Image 1 (cartoon, rainbow, N blue to C red):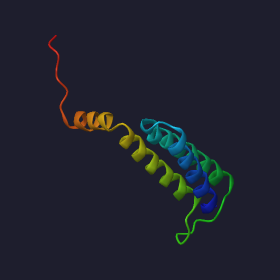
Image 2 (cartoon, rainbow, N blue to C red; image 1 turned 90 degrees about the horizontal axis):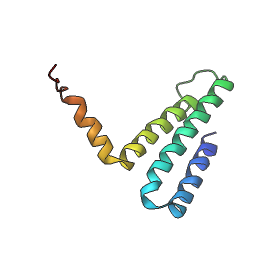
Image 3 (cartoon, rainbow, N blue to C red; image 1 turned 45 degrees about the horizontal axis):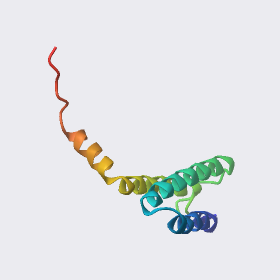
Image 4 (cartoon, rainbow, N blue to C red; image 1 turned 180 degrees about the vertical axis):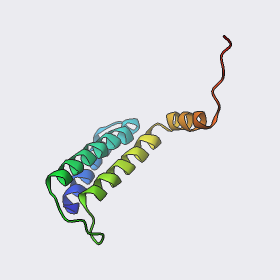
Length: 97
């Protein structure tokens, strides 16, 4: 299963590198990983395997795809991520009544 998801990630990523413009590669890769995370969740819900801490499960793959997809989205639009992170710590200005 890990090999299948690895191929489903690597092949579209290589195609995106060659076919898309450079500024579109990371957003496309982010969307690809979110879609794969969804497929991994659906597969994990359909295939009920016993929980075993020694093996990688489909839930682990879904979490990894989501985490890497979020990182690709942040690196694809760093100005938006910087804006989001700087606004989180600042207090909101109060408007006069």
